[in-house]
Image (cartoon, rainbow, N blue to C red; front, side):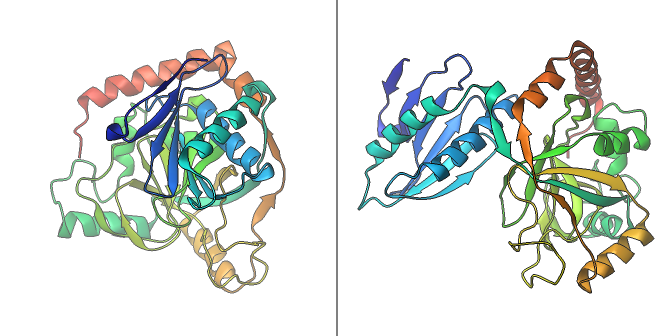
Length: 331
């Protein structure tokens, strides 16, 4: 292992070069009581790196280091909060380096992972209202607003044959919650099947209003909005509430945030009227969320991704997306 120390001017504490089956690790100062640990490269997005992040967080939870207070996993990073009166920054880095050596090779990683099944109503009227408000109040000439929706723009940007092709990609894959962030309870989902990859640029400028339950995409991540908020992701549908500070009866939640890091979500299509009925049942405390406890073996993802037929089809779809992106206007 080759290690090099860098000056604090760049905020980099140290870097560990990548080894076989281990990503490169960079340790960055994040204030006087936190350390930001970055894994691998920023591009392209690598689910294998995210699995390593979750494995590290789980291992540190089960093998606590005195003075380390809290962990926040990201897409390719881990934010580590520590008490500087108990443990110094250098000792945190040393502990993490030792811990990284204990993480098993990717094919052996098994992570706690629940399976959740959620309905989605594509192109619903509430989502269209959010898009239309943006057109009227913020940017009438936005290229991502086509006839009051973002869906046709997502289709065009990804080189898809039509809306049904987009819907199939959303419905055909399980979506891995790579991290929860930006604000409380917002899951950022990536498809476990590389053939279901879709991407879209963000709004510019952002919307001032996004409905709770909106399902949208920005970059490679699909998100579910847990509250009404501003937003910049392209909306394509709506689902059930994924946060509940009241903790209503029968919600099957031990936490006000439904979707946890490492959860897997599968969507199934419903009409808007069916979704509204399901949402009403949630608010009345009469709905049971479909949640299945379990684990996820990273070997399953590696097997799917390495299948020659899957790899060829995934690359063909990426090529179509690259070609389409050259012709699409960026918001």
